[in-house]
Amino acid sequence: MMRSDMDPYRFRAGPAPLLVSMPHTGTHIPEALLARMTPAAKALADTDWHLERLYDFLVEMDASVLVATHSRYVVDLNRPPDGANLYPGKDTTALVPVDTFSKEKIYLGIPPAEVEIRQRIKTYWKPYHAKLADALATIKAKHGYALLWDAHSIFSVVPRFFEGRLTDFNLGTVDGKSCAPNIGKNLLKKIKNYSAVLNGRFKGGYITRRYGDPANGVHAVQLELSEITYMDEQPPFGFREDLAARLRPLIRALLEEFLRAVPPASSRQSPRPH
Image (cartoon, rainbow, N blue to C red; front, side):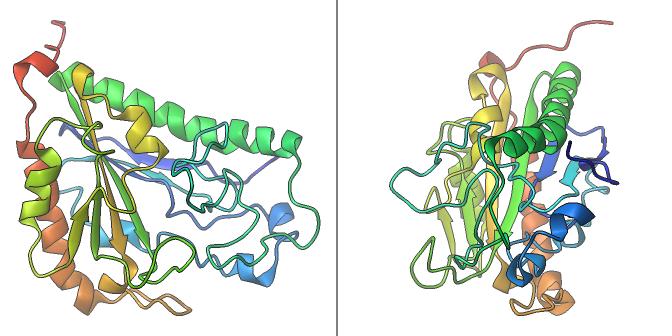
């Protein structure tokens, strides 16, 4: 049985109708599992580094925040539990990855068998998603709707997934299906002095697709940031406060715009009286 000395997530509730999810920031790997991994895996290069520090204004915004504690190498919380490829025809890493973004092996020996994969889903994947669903339900019950922002980041150059240097801001609304009309376009218009795209290579992963349900008052947006905008992309992957100081106000402005995008009454449900 897979055991860990750490809870699979940290959660802080806030009074605003906004929940920010960070499923790939975790760096913890249980000791027994770490012993089976290669030096390339132990470097944790594919982590969404420093997002909590970059988004340090969320308390001031009264947002709820859900943060994964374990590395995506343990299990990828932004993949469907059946392991289906979210981008058919394009390369991607698995629900339980066996190689890094650079196609380096994660395991010294035989990769996890199906029984171990199922256990990791039970131990780490399901608790995170249960909390995510519960938090959204709580927000919707209070406000009549809920806003989900799925926060991600990735190296600016990853030939496995895209050509050349990645756009700085990559907004995903699953081609407009995960939120009310015009939310994505309005967010895109707010981005100045950085390159930006809406529904490009990163249209939204499993979380955005699974929980974004605008017809029922839940609106989801994914932001995939190029890490070159706020950190060093070489080990030890240091945070660059000089870059972040310029970037952070824009991210906050996007979230404030998202909060202003109150959906029309036809897609909201009124909170039940107590």
